[in-house]
Length: 369
Image 1 (cartoon, rainbow, N blue to C red):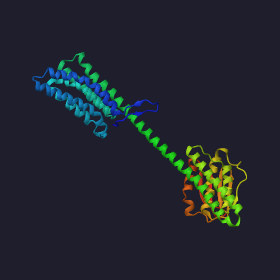
Image 2 (image 1 turned 120 degrees about the vertical axis):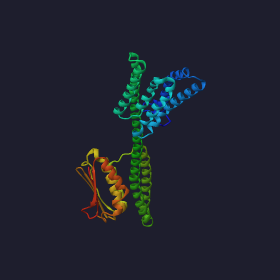
Image 3 (image 1 turned 135 degrees about the horizontal axis):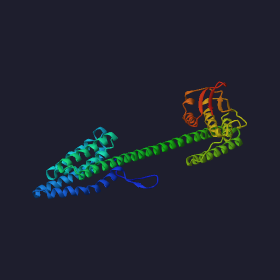
Image 4 (image 1 turned 90 degrees about the vertical axis):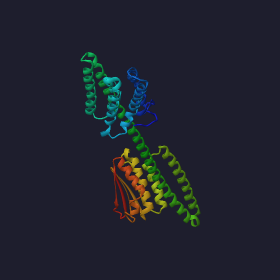
């Protein structure tokens, strides 16, 4: 709680941290110690006695100033030792002012309140201070109405500062919580960006690699087809770059129809027979973006890891499946970063993902929408 820099609130108002606000208010309140200082000087029998008394007043004031920050940095079960020490220090003035030392107990009560302990402990300590001040005043000056003002001041100001201390603590906790939420939001956005970039580049670079290999094989036997493939590689690279920029800006969306077209191109380039749906009408409108991500990652997985000759994408009511006739579930396929990112995306949207062996004999990726 004792940070030294100010922090802006959401409304833009600059708020000082608790220790700064405490020192400001506490320093102003020390003006009332001038009354004790005057009494010490008036009742001193010598200059040396006056100097010692004033020095004790200064020490008392400094102890009060550092009391609350010290209490905040002390384990809760030991915090009451701080106002207890200030109470003991107040009796140093007894040789000069007698039971007028109770006039300094307002400072002790304020520290009790700023310890931010349970209300039961706070009430007990504050009422106890007020009661001792009342009894000492009655015994010393007689039981008149005038002796009531000091206990009333001690109790009222101490309880007011106890409420202030709790408010300050709550504000600090809220500020810390806000900082933690901001850090979590940044981390979540970083994870989202990393996952999207992986999915986008993983798919695009896989297709680019397959098409480049195909163009290399066709270069001697079919130069015209090779040039076509190289042109498509260039278009894919430009598209991937545009996708990366759009994703970084947070504007990119996935269209399931576009992903089907991209899947057909990728599978054809890899020499895999594509069995794709001709329509996306069966997929609910609010789930088509998620279905697009499933098709993208599922087909990328087939091209990279399956060794398949056939890939089938099926849209059913509330379900998307990508299946192949390849080697089936393997460590490389099931533990891929892309599938992990897809699972996170799927579960984050309230859907459910499962992987296993397909009825074609290879790998199956299913998402229940």
